[in-house]
Image 1 (tube, rainbow, N blue to C red):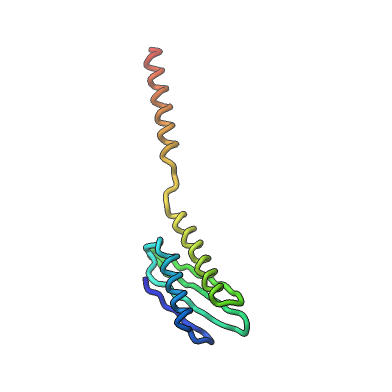
Image 2 (image 1 turned 90 degrees about the vertical axis):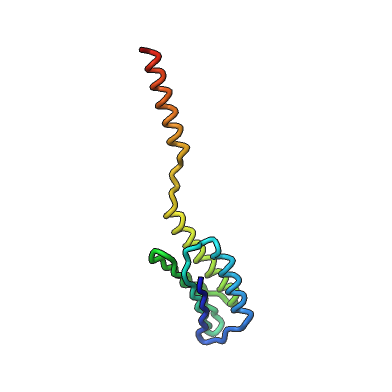
Length: 120
C-alpha cells in the first residue's frame, strides 16, 4: 500500500506525518486490496481539513473529507469515514447467504420423503 501525504497552505510536521502513517496502516490493514492512499491536509484560518482518497482493486475509489479545529482530529475522523465506506463495500461483495437455512430445508424434505415411503 502506497501512502502519500500532501499539505495545502501548510507545512507537514514529522509528528503529523508519523501520526497519519501509523493511523492509516493500523486502520486499513484488514483491507488487502488497497493499492494507494492519498491524504490531503489543508488549513483555512481556524478550520483544519483532512481528505482521504483510497484507490483499491476493481476500480474502487473512496473519498472521505472531514473538518474540525484540530488537525489530528480531522485526520482520525476522515480515516474512520473511509474505513466505514470500505467496510460497506466489502460487505456488499461478500456472500451473506446462510447455508444453515438450506440444510434445514434439506432435512425437512428428506423427512417428508421418508414418511411417504413408510405410508406406501
